[in-house]
Image (cartoon, rainbow, N blue to C red):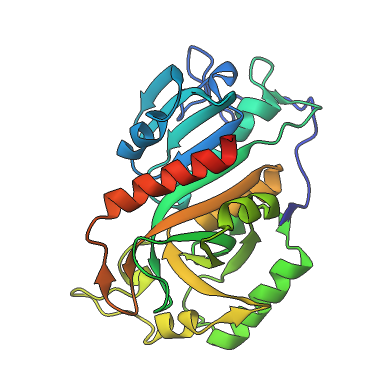
Amino acid sequence: MHAITLTEPGTALEASELVLNPDGSVYHLALRPEQLGDLVIVVGDQGRVDKVSRHFERIEHRVQNREFIAHTGVLHGTHITALSTGIGTDNIDIVLNELDALVNIDLAARSPKSEHRSLRIVRLGTCGALQEDIPVDSLVVSAYGVGLDNVLHYYAYENTDAEARLQNALLVHTDWPDNLPYPYVAAGDKDLIERLGHGNTTGITFTAGGFYGPQGRQLRLLPSVDGLNERISSFAHDGSRATNYEMETSALYGLSGLLGHRACTVCAVVANRLRKEYSKDHHAAIDRMIAQVLERLTA
């Protein structure tokens, strides 16, 4: 996924568009450029930030604003920021734009820089498996994110050929319902996927706009489309199959592609939706995921 156009370097951005705090930090993340690491580990759960940063050799900066908590430190010579995003692609929209502003916008001048800096952004999350043979407590690495949300539709972008082929195949296979948001497709960073995917399941991740109805769960309310999960779980394309549901990857991959950052998602499987199983100790699975990913990215 690529941006059709970007704001020209040197363009003056109004204070209402790039909102900063009195100390010069970006509005929601409350970070300043010097407080951001070269590697950014994003997690949904605030409590998971400490689970990541406890591996650091030292922590240099801590900040919290709303649901956004950031710990920046060092591990094996790599400067890392562990950052909570909260749940959903709407929050990812905030996080990605503000992370990009920290490295690619002169905040004092409120204008884009002429030189681009690319971040490595790795999401560590949880998910529900869409294949019976993907066990709970295992790890899934997302080669593609399929957006069942609407965030990327508000940006001017064009797909790569591979993304467009996957999207078209999905629409045909599922006979996509007219009453649901039009799905979009964004690829993750190939090098990160290869490094983090070794020994784990790699496939196509579906990002839902909610936890219950949008993922086919039925409590008191009935779904508007019968059998949507079956249509999705039976989808495969070019050697990859639908592997899991979660709630952030599509926007992470899409916005990273548009802004020129390298992104990858790794999720611990806490539920198998087809087998109706739930992990008996998902906290242990998350801890193993964190340790594995940090080792592979900083060794």
